[in-house]
Image (cartoon, rainbow, N blue to C red; front, side, top):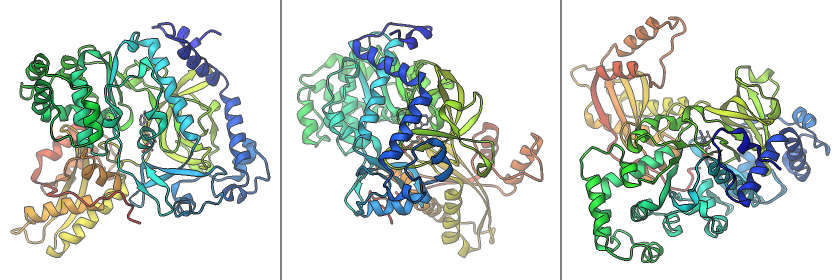
Length: 596
Ligand code: AMP
């Protein structure tokens, strides 16, 4: 059988191995038979789950076809199935959503009532995810030859996890994967050799984990052919870590001994085989690259000169980091290889070396049953469209039905169809619905921001007679870690006594306390978001903002204050009117346990 992917692309290297050939053939088969595979998937899901409490409720009467399914089963959001999820979390083992036992919950970075959403998963889902992973390198090998001759420096981390009252683990999907036997006992594959030992990846202390992963990366710098993290924000954090810790890392390299800050016995044991002797030459070289204060341009290529590309997602909210990655890497290509979520993994990028602005993901029809809600139309009146029937150029919201028991579930992602590969549509990730602010995996929507502003102002300002009359926000990612900036225009009762810096700082913290658990976890445990900042602007600033919008064509009747701004002339206008700035003085409350 001819592998069309190789023939249709302009690059192109032939498949590197039988394994690659098999994977590429699988992609061909899936993409040629999208509708057939989707029909099979929904049939399988409905027949195996026909006796579940959820499906029985809608009287499918044993029908497993798409038409009946669509007629009888409603399109839902998380809040619609929260009671069922809660019962499973509390220990109800009856067949509520799935006939297969729910083995754990994957904690999504999307939230409901301030807490991470819990996505059910069943044991076999791990195989489905593994299958999608196994397609990435065979595709990449078509574009970048020789990757099997070197290693990958991939910064991978586990995050804290908890147990539901009924005893099921609740953790992020990647934590679940890295802790699984699939990952820990993965068979040797020359195209997937990481420099980071498993002990470092699995260490719950992210600082020890990062230190070790960076040290290994430095020690093996010439062997590294690709460098990455899951999201762009993660790779930038690693660079930031190097900037602030290079002297200690250099000291370890020059003495051949591991810093005492590493207390994890597993890491110490594994590093005893990697850091075996002093290497003064390497230590001197790293020093020569890092000692130039504030000149970090091209640091990635200087330290890892054989890097062929950055393996990192820069689509969606991560696009804001592209300029910084370009600066640090001297313009290396950035490969966005996969599109996935806690609910299900979706698809891969068949042209991983394309420009970030051209990335399209091809959904693999075997992963779940996919439907598409046309984005422009009013949802009540709209028919959902099949995967095979979406139209090029149109935007849709993704709706999925999974083996683990989500039925017609709105994921909240807006995708645009860019074209087809065989009969499989390809999608550009446009945006996440309703997300205002995002630094890394946090997603803050308008209602959450509004509530945070209200809480802070009513608790701390109102008694002094001060009110927030307008506000907007901005995700400041110019520094690492990035942080939320909230612009406030105040109505101060006693002009001679505006709120003190102390009160305003408390407002910052109170806002943080009001934000969702993913935000607070990123602040407290992951340290991937910096302290929230309030910039108080002079009176009349928001009127000027409106004047500016109207001068650019906005209708005066319909003008609404944007609750988030990113357009440079607007942020410049706001910044030029700042009267005072204030930062959160402490960390908000966060623990892995859920609040309710
Ligand atoms: P989570 O369930 O927390 O893992 O988050 C999944 C969400 O992350 C998806 O629904 C998307 O909104 C976003 N996401 C995942 N992969 C990508 C990607 N390749 N490009 C842009 N956004 C992505």
